Image 1 (cartoon, rainbow, N blue to C red):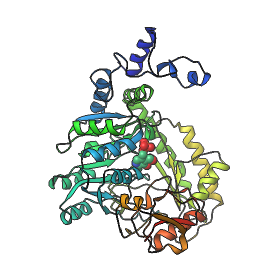
Image 2: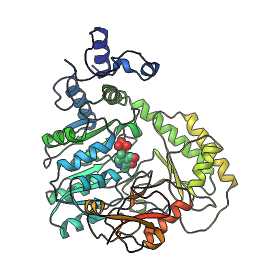
Image 3: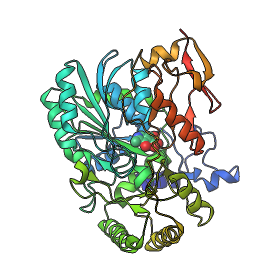
Amino acid sequence: MTLLKYLQSYTDKNILPMHMPGHKRKALAPYLHILGAKYDLTEITGMDDLHRPEGILKECQQKAQKLWHSQHSFFLVNGSTVGILAGIRSCTKTGDTVLVARNCHKSVYNAIELCGLNPVYILPQMLKKIPSYSCVQPSQVEEALKVHSDIKAVIITSPTYEGIISDVANIAKVAHSFGVPVLVDEAHGAHLDLSPYFTGGAVKAGADIVVQSLHKTLPSLTQTAVLHLNSKLVSPQSVQRQLSVFQTSSPSYLLMSSIDSCIEFVQNQRLFLNWNSNLESFKEQIQRLRYLEILNYTENSESIFGFDKSKLVISATQTNITGGRLFALLRDKYKIELEMCGGDYAIAMTSMADSQENLNILADALLSIDKTLLSVNRSPLCTTITALPKRNMSIAQALESPKKVIDKQFSKDSVCAEYIWLYPPGIPIITPGEVINSETLSIITAAAENKMNLQKTFSNSKEDIAIVEK
Ligand SMILES: Cc1ncc(COP(=O)(O)O)c(C=O)c1O
């Protein structure tokens, strides 16, 4: 039985709700009706408890296990963010050293800060076609594990926002030979391995902990996600305990029903077949692009292990417009809102919920824009770091130190006291404790000049930066 049907049969019983939530499942206010409060139940008799699942929620999680072939799967109601925090905490102790791909999402850095970890960073190479990261190589992981014998976990993102998939099977093989677990942030890859049309999923590849946002690529409500555990090195008890630390004690049954129903829904292979054929036909249409280019990495091109073709990464590097301009044109002139833009590219996300017509509209708009463009040979607008900044102190130390906000033009060689990132993708350009260098400053300046969504922990003005006081 799905959780949704279970909730329906409960509400049909007309039991007087002398318990939370305060809306009592009544449309006291019209918004509650619109938002579906009727099934917004909580851990009352018979409804099980996500933090100690023994009934319906245990059954639901077992369905996730079966679908992704994991040993244990845990529902998350606060996105991949909570899975990353709990996952990292469950395989480390305070003060441990962890190997982290520097292109990880900000939630990984928050885990480092909260868990008092000592990160050793590896930086993936840059892609050739756009200024963004390629995959993490197993050899990078092996080298780092040889040099730093105290590493207790390996943390990487695969696929990236741009759809780049790392060779998780060989990364896991290397890490396991050192007795170290691998956590993969697969927030953008819940659909991988659910059908033969999409491959490269991290659960199948043997990662110990895999965190997926269902809401990003599958038809499920925002915040819904799943953590999969497949490990001899991390115990399910430890993950369950950390989830009860980081996750709300009142998980939403609406969100959990969405996860459960989504799991049943996506077992219909026809949905993937349609998605794939819509993408194929889109590819045919955009053959006519002259200067814009939709990236399409086949196996081993540029040493990339895999590529998620559902991400339409539109490169404008050979044109007279930036990614931001392309993004704005599509929004303002064609009423198409993309997922994000980087300096020289923009990303359209597709899903099984896109019709062929949707993709035709996008293809037509791109072809029209392309006709107006000029071919330009220019250097790429890079908004990601290409070398690791020096680190002077830990993230936590820098955040807790006395700090001052100064004009960024005087900040070179100072220790940064804040995170600075573009959102999306949420990869820090600099983290607290790292030393500000000319690359940091040129990225911040380029991002501000191009009106990109630059976010900082403390300083407000684009001209300012928070540094640690000497
Ligand atoms: C790579 C990556 N990891 C983790 C997250 C966090 O996911 P969620 O929004 O589901 O918490 C994001 C969000 O954009 C992301 O891009």
